[in-house]
Length: 192
Ligand SMILES: C[S@@+](CC[C@H](N)C(=O)[O-])C[C@H]1O[C@@H](n2cnc3c(N)ncnc32)[C@H](O)[C@@H]1O
Image 1 (tube, rainbow, N blue to C red):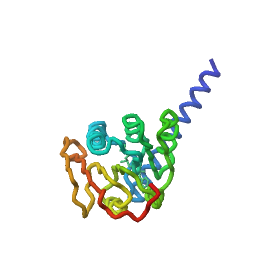
Image 2: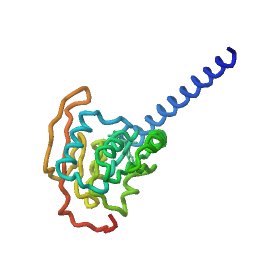
Image 3: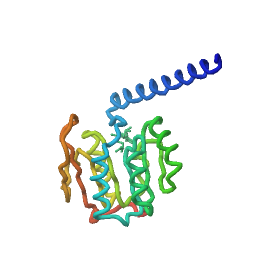
Image 4: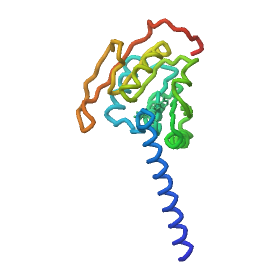
């Protein structure tokens, strides 16, 4: 009985420690001006996935720029088994979680670090992202790295989407999906 109580206390302690670490990490997100690890809602994911299916179901490389807990990347990997799906995440806790769950998805690869640094010397068929509005200018700087870019909620500051899909409104405001066709963008990097 004593052993069970001690085990439960240790487990509770560990859970509190992990929750505390996640909380501290989210505060850092805000201090550093990075999007919190808020997972995209299923409705947003579904709408974004429909865009991939519509235009680029044969995509070979897809990256979730700021992959958080990895849910969106896993869903893409499940629906598009022939694609290699990358998820790049800046913060360790969500990265570790996505890495662990990614074990069951052979076509995923999660990397820890700044997604923009990771993408620097690579091209991808599709980029998908759900970041803060103030990060969109940086996403736009990388437009030549993709054939298609799908942006959840916040548009690129100076680019014209081929489609702009209005979704539901909730406590976070009006939700949108913006689709950019970048096939004609002059590529500087060739190692896709
Ligand atoms: C709103 S969440 C979206 C998670 C996931 N893409 C989804 O849709 O469920 C944004 C994530 O991007 C990460 N992030 C922000 N800036 C980043 C950067 N420069 N490089 C990599 N990850 C970044 C944040 O840490 C956060 O976990």
